Image 1 (cartoon, rainbow, N blue to C red):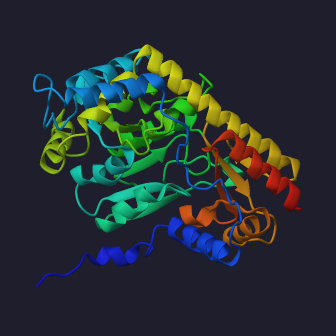
Image 2 (cartoon, rainbow, N blue to C red):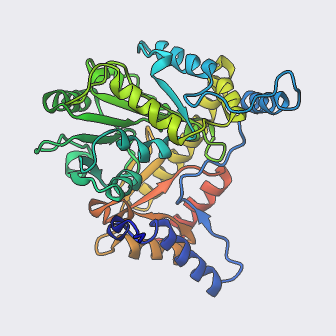
Length: 397
């Protein structure tokens, strides 16, 4: 007799954004015609860069000719793209071989699936607050979660857990707080991982938003990280591929865990992908090649600058009415402290009802997110300006 996975009862019944949509719909039903300003979901809005569009078209056109048509590709990714990613790291002084690159349909899938190459019932350390996929995917597989508090008094910086864990999920720039892990902080995690033979899963999906050269964009900028860390990357936020879907994971040959030999974890991830994944879209991968070209990098970095200007507008506007704002400097997210006496959901309702602005309550990202709101800078400039103006005109602290 079939039975369902009992671990589903241990995670929230719905992704927390479902409650956001529910409350938003209820407001619109009672206030028809009201214009809402969306500072909630971090979904890119600007058109893809011209060079990237050209790459995607090239991918489509190849499918129109028998001479260039391609069906299934390599599950690990197009060899040209894997080489381009390797060279992209190389330009940053990081030695990554193309055989260590695995192209996927995005960072979220890899973050959810990567723990499958480790034993069941592993002990997983994640930050609190943090992107929910790390927590929920590991709960569903029966792993035990240990939380690393990420709070205001420590600058929203995670520190290594006090107990021994098997896998550590880190996200820098952090979603939702926008905080950046410094070299010193990452060195502490690498030292911890080496000491306990743990593995770090480093989500660098927002790393292209980091503008300070002193701040690390990759875990592999830290000496010795190649022996204890997997890095997961994405084109979603750096090039607007949220709907196109394309990312990658780096699983170094040098990566070791307590019972593995050199290259074994790389082989296990390869086996997992070839078993459960038929490879990323060949059209999307042509676009990925264009992103990594010289002109593609120039154009996509200009889009990042656009979103970061939005973040600056939000930060200044909210600070002008007395709000305390974190993040939004090296990440497209701003972490806003709720007014004294208001919970995250109460402040959400206040912003929705008075300013007609949609945000994301911090409590959706974990216990320590209570008392904060996450705002996204991903929207058209005119919409960002309208939202900020509405808050300034209607919210009094």
